[in-house]
Length: 454
Image (cartoon, rainbow, N blue to C red; front, side, top):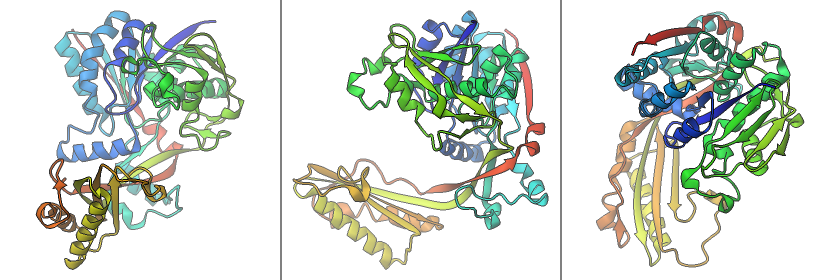
């Protein structure tokens, strides 16, 4: 049975640029797929694009391609990434510039159609109410504060781009799994209703999408994982029937085991009987995960059923401002000093009429991760760092908070220390998740190609 090897290249915007080089050099892969987008990432990219119309994509795609393109050109490896963020054409131009600098002939495909910002009014006129998936609320006056609107596309446009000869495929908002499923559809010619194979392809993408997390990163038994500093990103050897073996490049660090794969398999799964994607609804309860040798795990048996009639859309809207401040205290009575400093800040905000919509105080070194369930410390803490943050619709109120921290060094508890300056207020972007009928979106999806000459 014919197989093809697909490697993971990136699990998020900001992931290490080093492990993917081992995937390309030593992984014997035909494709490398990069999942760079989270909901938070879209908000970050929107802020970038507001400052620069040519921004809005993940900027690490430039050094990534500068490192990878020569290796991939030599070995015939094709790259698929959603680094286009909310501006795929700009990302494609940036990658084309890198290819020109390197003197490499490269065919770059750009997938567009996920940006539906300009369609919102037309959709509303057709009666779409954009109900929030979590709360059931309709969009209402939030509509006037919308900054971006992206729909999660599936794998078919990626497969089309590969069919048309693309060496590099750049998309905007797709599902995390689409970058991996697209090459499989292209290679094996899976039909749109080949539900079980498509479901297996989705699970392959799900296992690989978080880069090192399937090969020993973020693993419960992390002490058992060798050489995390040279972790090998996972590689899947997939067969025409959709079954696949997860492994990694020989000689790299990390660990591929049933346990590491299962932890990633369960990651972000709500209903294991209905893992919904634009391409297929997967039943993970039928999946089998079995050892297949050292650093090799076989995954098979996932079943699927017809894709949903709607696509998920994510709308980002202006949602006020966040202000924060920090101050650190050392032993003795570090926690008591931090509590007094919090009281001073709260009282001074109240004296100035600042009424935040939310206020959070946390003691780093005591409860910043555990929150309210953190037990009282049994002994003296060596050091505590107080962080106070507020959410408000007034930027000026955030600036008032910032100004209350420097005075603590002379007019607060003894021995206050600064680690760095007080952060400037930052605008908050709220996220609104909704569903849109796919027939409103998919006819608008486009794949465009550019030939970069050597």
